[in-house]
Structure formats: C-alpha cells, structure tokens
Length: 215
Image (cartoon, rainbow, N blue to C red; front, side):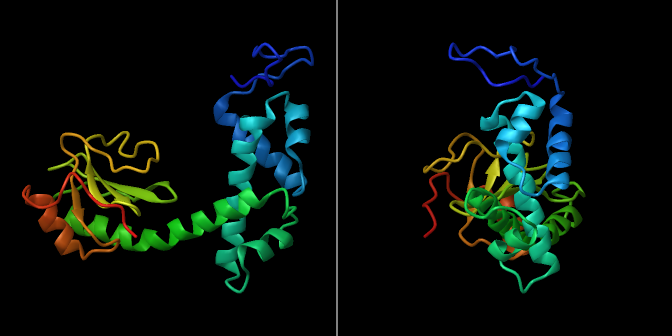
C-alpha cells in the first residue's frame, strides 16, 4: 500500500488520515487528476491522496506527462516537445523533467521498428520466441531469446550484448559495462544487420566481455 509522506522521524504521518491505495491503482488515480487539470501540482495530488510528493507522486505524474507529450508530438510532427507541453497545458518551467522524459520516449519509439524487425528475424531463425519487443527503459531494450542466451540487450553505451537473466536483463545504469559469466558484447553498431547479430549469437568466439563505451 502507498501511504502519505514520512514525518521527521521517517515514519508515515497518518495525522491527516492517509488513504491506502494499491500500487496498481496509484497511476490510474494520478492520471485522473491530470485529465481533470493538466496544470495539477505535485502538492495537490499528494495532499488529496495523502501520499508523498517525492518520489511517489513525481514518479507517476512526470512519466504520464512525458508520454502524453510524446503522443502529441507523434500525432503532430511539426511540434517539438516544448510546444506540445504548452499545447497540453502543462507548465513548462517546473515540469522540464516531463519534457526530458518525452524526448527519451520518442527516441525509444523511433528504435522500436528496427528492434521488432530484428526480433522477428531471430524468431524465424529459431533462436528467439515470437513476441513484441519490450521497451524496458529509454536507453536500452531487450529481446527475449531462448538460446544461446536468456536475453539480448540493446544498450546505447555498450551496444548489443547478451544477458544472463530474461526476467531482469537490464541492471541499474552505471558508467561501466556489465560483466559476468554469459555476458558478451556482440557487435559495435547500434543497428547491425540481423544476420550479423544472429551469427554473433551463434558463435561463442565472437564478442567481448570487456566492451568500450560508445562515443
């Protein structure tokens, strides 16, 4: 359950009568506020629902705004994210974070057709399951694969690499490449030909477990 923000001792402050909200419903509740008032503030949502402004409301409100900004830019390509923010009625200065999220969202969406094409190619070759590409985060996406690696990750710093876990293929962002048994950086480019990627996956001699950060 999500409760209100902690008091000075770090304990939840229930003096205002906190409302218990299941986590799977929290984003829907925040979206209702945004639908009713595009300029809604963190404080208003937090005070009404009795939950913490940071990170609870912020982690829901900013991504919602960011995705809606991205939707509008896709629908009206002449708009940039800042213009879309104004058109949607979102305050631009206090919500620059939403613009940043929108830019990352648009970047991720632009990569998805290539990734889906690659996923279909790998599935046809019998090396991956047929599935929609899952966009895990703005700068990294993974394709579920049966063998010879549980998952394939596309990372814009370290390029294409194998992962040892399909459930958690992407770790926390760091300045160093992920290392470990079964992790290989396969090819150097962001959009290699599917045939090149397939060959690298099948040949255990290809790739390195010490990739360089891409410029």
